[in-house]
Length: 293
Image (cartoon, rainbow, N blue to C red; front, side, top):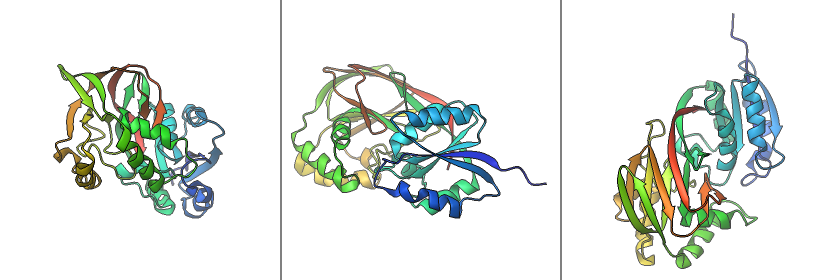
């Protein structure tokens, strides 16, 4: 006798990214294996609604919740599924799609659905920053500043992000930090501080190429600002996964860290800006999330 179909819930963020989520419902009907899955589709109606919908699915014993959106949607779904038997799947429909790119989940909806059909589950780490969950990258400094600006524009996608990053790069000044990591105290004036579980913000900007998502460690990346004429040489290293080979990035593998800002600068969690205060406590949460990948 064949196994009964797995119950799964698709959670679609209708406002995410560049509009790809509008075709997902049709693709699900065409490409999802109906013999293997009994599915339903829910649409988020407000920020944090995906947390509620995912928690409900986990409590009802669903096999998986599929996040259809960007890294913000993925983050909300993950928050609710930590330490449960309900796996998370991803149909990338955001702008950067950092975790999906890192895990080699296709940006093509049909191919992403075929991956779900195969239903291979991997247990991965997550992290917390001041108790707030992140799956891919959290941080403070220039990346958080750009995330805040990017959230305010109507036009999404890589070129919109790149334009903001370039314009703000010229006028953004590095900030002072004190960092406690691996029994060391580091005082630094840095462009940004990233705590990475995956290798990138999204758009294949691979700021932490040595990240391993199931090693029980996070990468603490301390990044100096290259002068503008050096930046043109450094940027290609970031996109080909060699950022750690440049003299502008120091990476520490760690289970926890403490970051103290001289001023209360905006932070970001998986690309969404957030005010976390001047002191940031970072911890890895090993083997905490089941992911279809």
